[in-house]
Amino acid sequence: MTIQSDAAPTPHIPERIRTALGLSPSGPHYAFYRHKGLVRAAHWINALCLAILFMSGLNIFNAHTALYWGNSSIFAHPILVLGTYYNDDGAVTRGVTTIFGHEFTTTGLFGASNEDGVLTGRGFPSWATLPGPNWLAMARQWHFAFAWLLVFNAVVFFIYGIWSRHFARDLAPTAKDLTHLPREIADHARLKFPHGEKARHYNALQKLAYCFVIFILGPLIVLTGLTMSPTMDSAFPLLEIFGGRQSARTIHFLCAFGFFGFFLVHVAMVILSGSWNNLRSMITGWYVIRGRKPS
Amino acid sequence: MTDRRGFLGRAVAGASTLLLGGCYDLSQKPWFTNALGKVEDLTHAAQNLIAGPQALAPEFTKADIAPVFRANGTLDPGTPEYAGHVGSGFKNWRITVTGLVAHPLSLSLDDLRRLPARTQITRHDCVEGWSCIGEWTGPQLSRILAAAAPKPEARYAVFYCADPMTAEGDPSHNYYESMDLSEAMHPQTILAYQMNGAPLTVPHGAPVRLRAERQLGYKQPKYVQRIDLVADYSAIQGGKGGYWEDLGYTWYGGI
Image 1 (cartoon, each protein chain N blue to C red):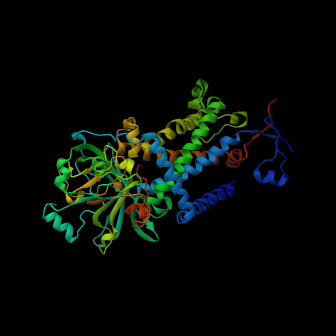
Image 2 (cartoon, rainbow over the protein chains, first blue to last red):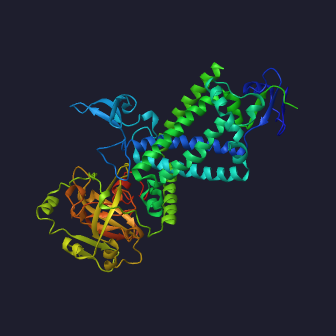
Image 3 (tube, rainbow over the protein chains, first blue to last red):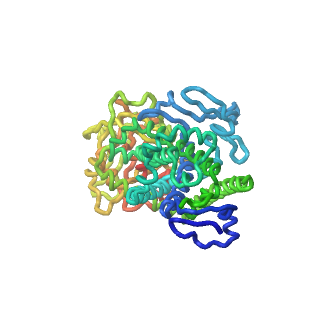
């Protein structure tokens, strides 16, 4: 066995489990403890919350499938509409997505999709919403329950991140990071990822992406969510900075898709840069680096 | 590696099916919906703590009034009695204040108009997600409740309305709503008889609708006929405190 570790000794794991986990490939390797327990727990709680919040949010959106800017919904001038065309018999014929007045046919995905085998008028399709059927009352309750969990998790993570210097040490981009940025963008575009010792730290693109979702997208989606509450608006007129309740709803929607985009890129990067090694490090904490540990 | 990727793909697909199916099943389980009810209590308590009983909903200017104010829910109660009231200009319409009060009241529209009125330009937020700004005029409910003198055990105001919610039109299943006395006494909680400077139209709840500006639209009933003060609403209709609440919407409508 050629695995060594630095932060702590690698726990004894039977050979077959090591093989299954990809821990004993040929050649010298060493493992290091990449993610602390609290970070791992926060990551998975966050993943669960965001999945449920996104899908229950799409169900809530289905109750009124249009977005506006300002305080009132100016029904004649929506920003986005997921709409449905019906024939004279009342049967659904077409689903459309209208953005700033430009209409695109999106039958099967947006505006009209199959529900129990029947083409049905609905904003987002039933496979993407939670619960599957349009059920505003239930989707709202799921949404608020997991919003609380998300915020509780975030508070613990922020306190830990500041107290343990996780943010300052691991996430804050340095001036040096930024000078590497053009090079990293070129490398990522060619799917070349850092190896060896360089994989022990987040690269500049990772730091920027994580900082963007943690410090910008996260707070923004929570605050715009609260702005949609009429009681919260009575407590904090400052929430009007988002330009009104309908603007806040639109920003909330864009942030949700910002998170969805982050999720797609994040999962793609996890897979392309070594799915099992990455996944293992976010479950057990241990990340394996190929090659002999520099002495 | 491709095997692993294939496996990962199947795992993700399987997990999402389980998650979706599981969530739908959970939504039907009493223990789970009870837990969600606890979350509603938490949200209610937190918002009470943050906003307090007196914080005012934002008010706007005439320029902000929505060009089209959507009317939702019942657009016309459609009963012969209601049609009669429309025909007579609501001159025989009464709003009674009953239940746990020292002085039950029966008020005509003229009685309401004689009370000092509050005019407020506010944003109406529908639970569906849309909003419309409109101007509302009417006496503060706190003034009317004070005249009725609630008894100490009164905890909720229950609003009974003229719009039937069943196909048969059974009046014991008309629209109803409830709110705690703190929200009922809020300065912006008014019995509005005017909207955008004109008498309320039928789709908007003529002759009188409740405005409770820190609540969603379903907490602000139209066609109000009776305000009953109670200690507990569990014996009324479905027992959840309102027409939409009986269909699964949260009783707390501040979010």
